Image 1 (cartoon, rainbow over the protein chains, first blue to last red):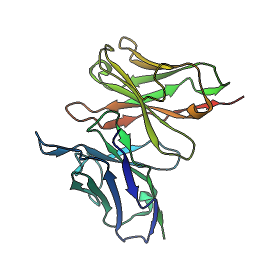
Image 2: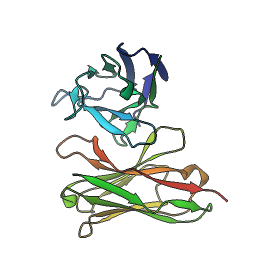
Image 3: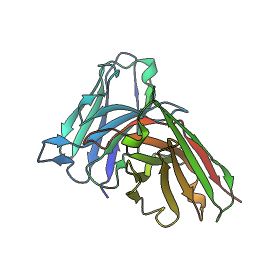
Length: 113
Length: 120
């Protein structure tokens, strides 16, 4: 199985400041035939199911605010919240869909400082 | 509006069985692969099982293989997960999730989840 490791486990950021979450895969999730990274990001607020934010490592899902951005390739990826809002308090997960089974990172909890 | 509504969770003794259901609406259910993903209390997300659009192909996580069975009834727009020989470590919220259409394998819609507690 492809192991996904996120860092940090938690972070506290002031309102309006940048939050950066890292995700590393144990093997490349870049599919050479189409040059796409098979990686998604989800947001899970307390007591709610996960919600898709980003797929193909950097494509925002419809309706996701543009303060959320994804970057990276191969084995190293980043989710950035450019200006943290109160409603962004949540746990964020990366997920690879390159290999079976689909696997998730352990999650990163984002709080307000 | 896409909706996925799980039901069937509850308290069950170790070794017991439960069948979860996921009622789908707002999209052409028979055209989509569907998945079950679980989340133990305070823990992360773990993929459990998937089924293709017509029900002819299924896959399972090693941890549930031989104990869980995924199925679907496209006439009823419903996904199922039959869980047998339940263990304490199966305690979790179980989500049904829709695989996006096309070549990607991310989950674009999730249900609210149903809690399964395995305890004596």
